[in-house]
Length: 275
Ligand SMILES: C[S@@+](CC[C@H](N)C(=O)[O-])C[C@H]1O[C@@H](n2cnc3c(N)ncnc32)[C@H](O)[C@@H]1O
Image (tube, rainbow, N blue to C red; front, side, top):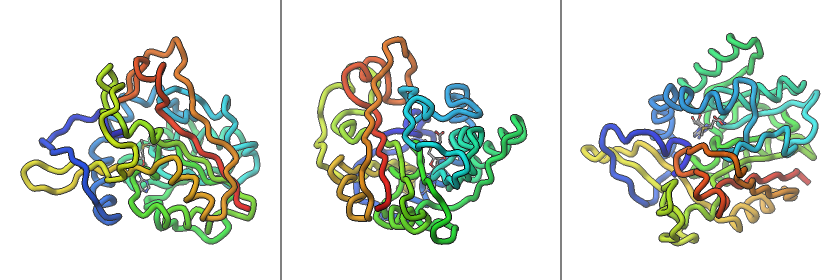
């Protein structure tokens, strides 16, 4: 539905909604992002900026939003960091930011940009459901359209975030706005017609037409699910930002476009603090 949604379906895949495990999600999404990384960076790299922090296709920057608070001198972890653009921006603001991503190829792009711009994001290849860090290592954990919507075991992922955060630590993440799951993933007028239940949490799955092997997975949780998840893990929700589509912004990114963005939210940014 998002992230890799604008990639060509090659080899031919069957798109469906069906239950899928964490292991299957991970087995699919790691290699999928390895395949897609070069095209993703070529298509979106300039918009993201080598040292740039945008929260989503609307182009809202962390400089404008200030969701993370002052990061100077803070230990910061980005989940699903891709080529590390956001974490690199945090570094440029004096934060000690680290990256974590499932995809080896995405991390190779991160090293490429590190070398090109001279701002290095130390990064690790791992999954967001098993963070290779000691307890209480970070002041801030964030995720910009990164791992969260690709993870099946979201309770495990959030518990891991709680474990690595220090008391009072901040967790912020952007995801496809949950209401988008009511609509076809189409940037045109078709994408404005509600055709699927908002409450249907069945994951979106792409599987190889010939072999049935799952090649891409996204998971849906409603706004209420996210609030319950955060509250249940001991977080206090401090913000829910729904970026508006700028009137002069004409970029199409997968299912995001001006046509839809002027009428309906495409991105949700949650911010929460550990009690
Ligand atoms: C849409 S990209 C976002 C990357 C970056 N934040 C950006 O704005 O370009 C999603 C990233 O999440 C990563 N990812 C997917 N599932 C993951 C998981 N379980 N653990 C860690 N990273 C994951 C992908 O490899 C990919 O790099």
